[in-house]
Amino acid sequence: MKKYLAAAVAAVSLLGLGGCATMDRTTVGTVGGAVVGGVIGDAVLGTPGAIAGAIGGGYLGNKAAKK
Image (cartoon, rainbow, N blue to C red; front, side, top):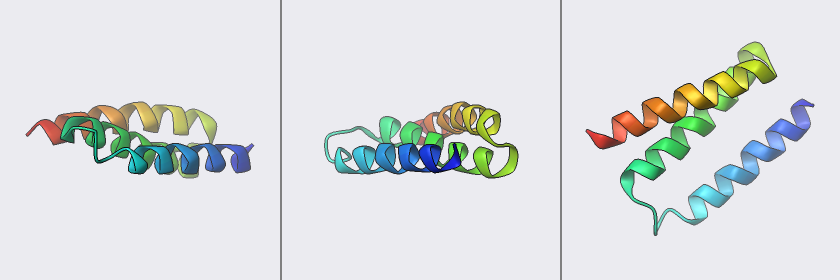
């Protein structure tokens, strides 16, 4: 299961980075925060941690980008 989650995170990261030229700062912060939070959450608590980490990281990344 972790292999699939890691592959999904990598794919989303590449898609997000590929579209950075057309995304605004808030969107980049949200996507970046979600990816980082998801990876850290997965490493600590597994799949439930990845989900919670992605949600929390996306929220924090969104708020940080707005400042």
